[in-house]
Length: 313
Image (cartoon, rainbow, N blue to C red):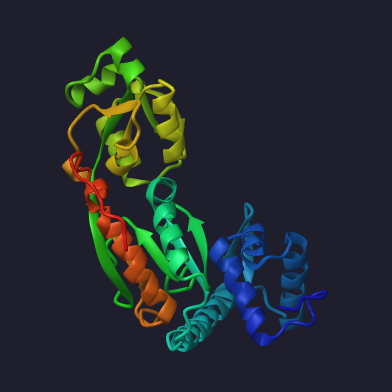
């Protein structure tokens, strides 16, 4: 994209930036998404509105809300984007090379505890494929190519997506040996309210956070953090007990399960891509090798304390 005082912008880029402002609701958010600074987007948008003699956004309390004219431009931009992405997927889907970049997204817990070992094996077999791992607990949009492949705890429902179920992943409460020896071990959910509970920050929207809010007294929380890895480290430090995925907590020798896994928090782990990309050579290789590596660790992922896994050949 070429921006200079709001003049040298192609038609598609005009639509692209209006779409970015509408999605972000702010110039700062749009600038971040597009890789430009706030002042550049501000100058460009003002120049565009002046040139077209129309207001595209209402500015209210720092939020940018499309006007009727802006909304029409946003709809057109979404259609143009969808066609461009479909063409890109079609071309990429015919790529038979076992080389190039793969953008993969996964949760921080899976990346921290399991995924790197599997990716190391994949890279040993396919050294020409560059992995860009986006560690993000949000569900990045595969339809918009925010990632090529997602490893997520959600069954895909969009018809355009193709997925492979890896495992069911249970959750339960963990505490450190030191904490439990000093405070005793809870015997059921009701007795958790008498303990120091480690929870999520107030803005969290994770299913585990919502469950804790509904089932644990607000007075029980002694420490909150937005990171599950930090929650794990807080448990290890003896700050309290925390609700963790079993594949994360079970591998730590200095903490232990307090309760049996909670059925209502069990999730499904899926390997997902767009159906147009499934036959791309590097995507297919990733599904075969990394998918196989994760399946070999199914007992660990499913919280089977007696289970083992076999290394991939």
